[in-house]
Length: 240
Image (cartoon, rainbow, N blue to C red; front, side, top):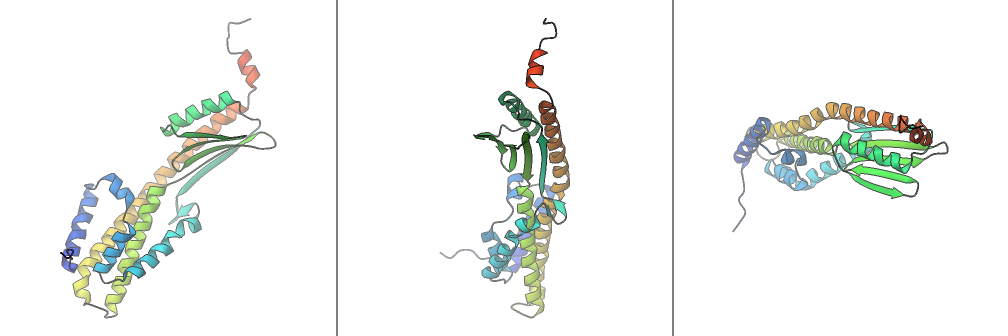
């Protein structure tokens, strides 16, 4: 039994309903965060007359973009980092207290790793590193908004497919542009929706993560700025 095929009119209706549901918030957040797979993009391209290999080529070109863009994408922050030099090494007790603060601040248990003089706390893309320096230690924090990048890449690839399909239709390749127009319009709508959803997340996310990292750095600096022995000696105000 052959697999069901959808013509342009049916594809347009499918994407129109999907787009409307997305804007109403009817799609589950996990689905929105995942974006579209390459197989799904190929299927979309096939339905509007674009060869699967062209879709894959466009996807590979955009997939290489994050490393080239570095800390921003579309002029918006995709990576946030903060570092501070500590004048001395934190004690094991101080590091454990800092980890507790990290868990409270980011509302995540995270994972601990010790490698000699190097200490690390991670939670997904969020990394906090404590590494030795000649004068003391360096506390480095960094994170990356992977879900937003996925949406932006998915939207960019979808829009690329739509543009290529539109150019092919204008050049008289395949069916008339009037027959393809409904599918192209909904394809543009889906791509724009994914791109916008990813971009809108970034400014508020970056501000929050930056303020959280600055608060952690301030706490670590306060710890390192006082002598552990002095703190122990003044632990009980009523002692003689």
